[in-house]
Image (cartoon, rainbow, N blue to C red; front, side, top):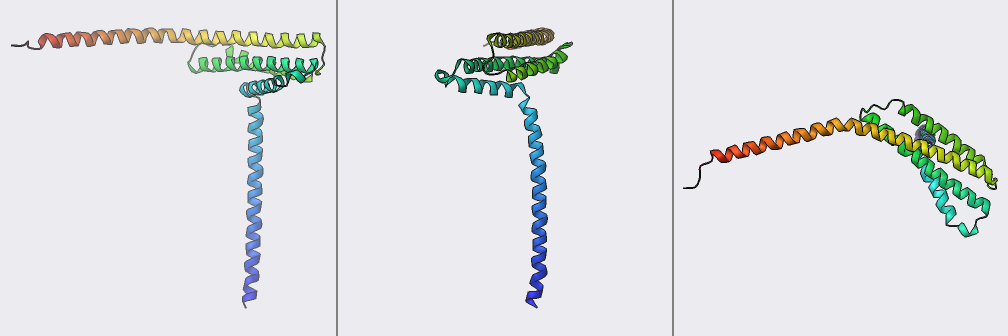
Length: 200
């Protein structure tokens, strides 16, 4: 009797274990897909690219006395990539801040999106260039990165100027209101002293 009751119990326990293991496997797969999608999206962010380029340049520089001339050129390219993505990230943050502040940004959001696309293309060409690329190729790449940095700085300056222009009227109103309040308090204090009885 005991043996006959243990059989269905073991079968039920095995079925529950298989069901639980299947649910864990499905949840793990779904989680892995979400994390992979987020990682791919994060890997495209200028901050991540800046950090990656900086890390590569620093790591290679620490081995500088063992580098060939071609590898030294690659280190210089990684430094250029780091500067480029730092400038792109600064421009994107400035435009985002100006937009959030309600400043008149015009075509700056579209320009900063184009800037990101161009920087991505320039870095893609840089990755395809061989380590021992000729001087002309390396110089051309440096010039392209420099042009992207210049464009990023121009967009950054325009966004900062738009935000500053937006804040000027608010600042003037704040200063005027603060001055008015200080004068009102000073007047109230003076009247209070006038109405106070003097010492006997």
